[in-house]
Amino acid sequence: MSALPPRHPAPPPGACPVQAMRAAATAPVAPALEGRHPCFSTTAEGHASSARLHLPVSPGCNIACAFCRRDFNRREQRPGVATRLLTPEQAVATVERALALCPTISVVGIAGPGDPLATPHALETFRLVRSRWPDLILCLSTNGLMLPERIGALTEAGVGTVTVTVNAVDPAIQARISPKIAWERRRLDGVTAAERLIANQLEGIHRAALAGATVKVNTVLIPGINDHHIGEVAARVAAAGARLINVIPLIPQHDFAHLPPPGLLMRHQARTAAARHLRVFTHCQRCRADACGIPGVSDYTAELYGDGVSAEPTFSHG
Ligand code: CLF
Ligand code: SF4
Image 1 (cartoon, rainbow, N blue to C red):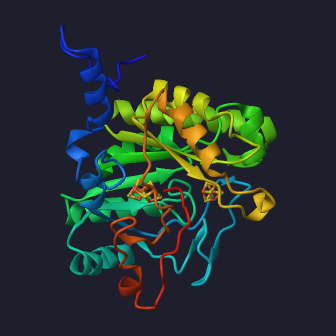
Image 2 (cartoon, rainbow, N blue to C red):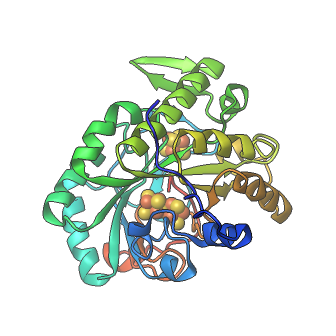
């Protein structure tokens, strides 16, 4: 296996171990992203000093998560819902309008409403945006099923930050979260589907990190399903090359509508377990697939689309 960049740089010989630990806790995950990417910055100032634009260009998905149901409307604020779908060309026009509204946008992300690698729209959009605005950071959020075979194309398109949603590394647990997937023109179910998805996610993380991308993992915290499993997820994705993990509380809906949202103690325990292996991102705003602005600080979605859409809390692949 090829060498990955160290997650925590070794302290210089003779350095005080306590000071070294403190420095590691506040050191940037990726110095080039600090203050330029709201979801990969480690300081409060970094989170609040740059904006992101999500382009809702991806219509379909290749797996079926029990907490997700995709739809197009202006009312619901939940995973898989967007006001509208944009073509790659419409997305370019949207970037132009968004930059005029919010000049601090430094990141253009694609996080839905379906999976950005299940259809070719996201890659085409990234290419178009890159050719027009080469200084913008391109950010992908995916379930990871197609990540291993898209690494080359993503690198060529200039995608520098990648988020993979990994909800379990135990196939028996994952099979309860995403009971079926589409793989090589066939449907896979249960543990067979879960084994394929997990293998592709871990390989995709490894290959993305080797290709130079900074990789974050999103994990949806689901009471009674994966709440005791978060540490194992963090350990495996850290070994694969992820630099950051974001534990996202479940918003109960669809087949998981009967579950409670995770409480404060469960969230704390899950993040503590994850923190033994990886830096934990705690500023997530569970963004819409068409969000525009600084997460949790400003939102220009309504102005951008001119239809009064507000950005209430929800999450996409984010
Ligand atoms: Fe978007 Fe996600 Fe890129 Fe950020 S969001 S694709 S990494 S630019 Fe950020 Fe929003 Fe949380 Fe996502 S706050 S939902 S973690
Ligand atoms: Fe697909 Fe994402 Fe919905 Fe899961 S949450 S079914 S990966 S769109």
